[in-house]
Length: 367
Image 1 (cartoon, rainbow, N blue to C red):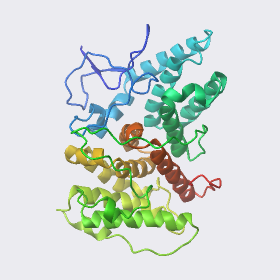
Image 2: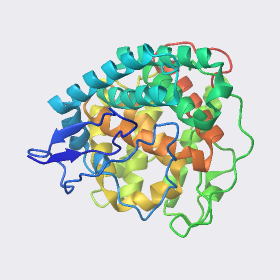
Image 3: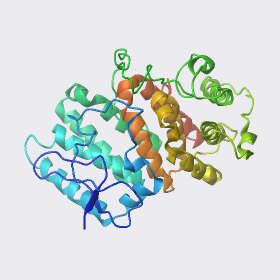
């Protein structure tokens, strides 16, 4: 029986591992692949330039695909063998804190985050922190610091805890390369980042006027609550969702705003509250549609806001795997459109999530 390999696979050195599952009964319509690829989570691997013309990886074509993979015997065998491999490296002088060992741990963590196995993920994150300390601190990992920052921030968001690693801000990032598949520079602005009015930022964009108004209200809501004020804001036009002919982009923005807005109500409604379950299912169906993929590449900040919100709301549901994989894709790509901007957006969302759960964030966490 041929094997179906799901990207990104893991080909490192002798004895490296990669998850394989039987192609039979797979929900994916992707053709069988037999070639290997180095995981982007490996320190030596380059994060691909965002390309609006590239097809989606099969893991993001259907929410059922990643759930299928995570429940196969092939995945659990991969996990078991990976842990054994890591433990062997930890016993060898010079290998326990190597780039390769750290990359393998991060790679396994991405799958376990998708599974919602936050207890193990937290242990792995503690281990990574210890390995970095043994290597001499953050400077020893400068060549893959955004991957470390992002996985740390992602674990913090998923567990509503503080990040463990502390990086200095980077110098301003260069503009995205002048690539015809990207067009103009990617736009990081969203309800979670930016101060320029979105009516200016999103002028002549695929987002309609109503989309822009909703996004601006969500940003204003964050700004007001962070300042300690409780001003009331006009409620977005959620009634528009009753129209069957609603454009897909507007529908996704409105659905995400419903969950996000509830987190700021008094008392706050946590993202994972059952009242959000129906909305999660609808967002998932809309994001499975690839019609808006070029927009997501050009406006990664807005996509980050969407998948952060939906992923937090799906914490105890199968859709979590799909949203977190989407989150990893847009999050890693921030190396091109602004790691510092993505970091601030993630920290701001962490503050919002902790607030909705009745937790008190440390001063400065959302700065």
